[in-house]
Length: 422
Image (cartoon, rainbow, N blue to C red; front, side, top):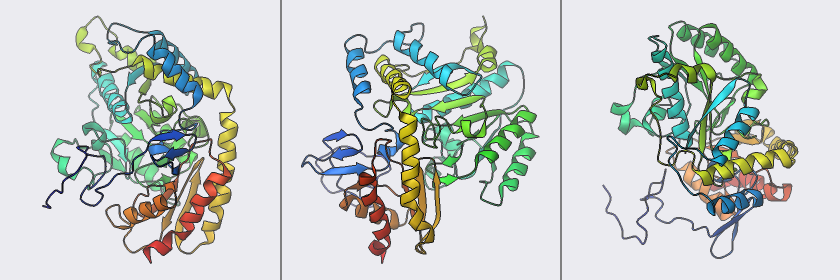
């Protein structure tokens, strides 16, 4: 155990080893694709501040909606009460989401949206009298840091200390190129055992290393679940709101999940808000004069009016501004800037899905706990870039307002990264 040096701040930061990173980078302001330090230094937010900022920081329409709502209604218990922003946003989401998702349950983070999804699935089977309780997951996945979400995510150093609290799940391998049939066969075998649900990150496994697979695999997994009556949960907390090139990743596979989890870009990244959407039959299984069949989940800030107003403004941005054109432009820009790395022997597994690019820097130890990640992040920060590698996996996921002039220095810094470790 190391002795703890004195510090001016009492804050315990997330995913931060304070003994190795005693000083945090202060940020005083943000605008568009940039963060601004107290000294006025501009830092390109090349990972959208942990994947939440879609249109750019402080989008005027969303900021205005938040200010207006704060002047009217700030907070209200959502059990037995409702309000206009929540009602309007829910209707918009039902109209935008894949077909058949007719019910919207509000929460306040990606982790809680997944917890809600798991509870919905288990409650559905219990209430219709079927003994289906197990969950199938994909190896390498990440769904959050609460107990249920850790249970359905990859096991490792992130959750080893909490193993006594986690429940067992069944796993299928990640569909690596050329090995997709192994995944599908494993899923079919497990689905034959009548589990409750299969949960998956569509097209891109985020914190698991930005691993990517094709929409045809996603469609095949959905067909297998349908054939066995297994509920299909799509965790689009990261992939939703345009990150993979379409509004929702499921669109590319032409599928509608039974349960859909959304957060991050739901408010354009301005405020925390999440929803779990489901098919009508899941709601109906909980609908009864018997109060014991109530869906027992909530949080104090469920459907906070100000957050819902931000979410509604985000939808209005999608409807009134050329967001899809910006995404298409960003896709092309990302592909152009990534292309030279495909022939660069210092890198491997160079890949892109929609607006997300990722590649592996060839090093001896590229694990998450190796020194490579912090060294690379420090290198990027020195160059005025917020890029936070996952071990030796470098990825770029910027807001849709970013320009070529913004991104070119980022890829130049990536090209220089091997020298940092030499």
